[in-house]
Length: 242
Figure (tube, rainbow, N blue to C red):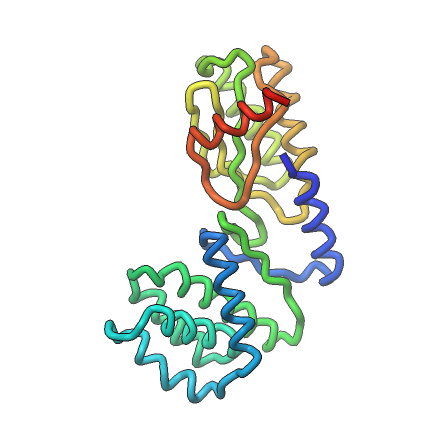
């Protein structure tokens, strides 16, 4: 599951920064995020003047310009802490529907956080995951399995809706979506950054199991990407072999 380890890491980060953080709300591929910050860090070593960067904005709209060059321009804009750069990124995000869309979204959000930190004179941690978040909460994909190995009955679905809904609401969490995939239950959840994932999910499972003891206590949770049924199959089959 790895949820306790994730909670401990987030708790440690928040402690070091005095609880000041900003969340990337958009869902952006994790590998793309790593590449973005890699390029951003390399450009920071020989940082250009903001006037020169702004002059290159026109190149973003030129179809003849190489995509890698455009990525560098967007990364430079994002790291400039400039209001003008912020406005240019905001405009580009709205206009582009190219393969640079996610890169531009990440650049825009990163610029926004940097600008806020500068204007408010406070350091914020930028928390970005593959599934993004909402306000001060992170998005997670969670999958559970019916002990019987069969699909969920109508009664079981009602129990799940009621008990998970109650426990999550009680802990300031939100269920965005519920899917039943044969013997699996998949949820997309919004949870506060500092909430104890393991405790909350375990509590919900225990409440559900008071009404028929049909849900396995092992579950899969990730904030990297949405998973398909074959991914869920792979995880639970691996767990069963342990």
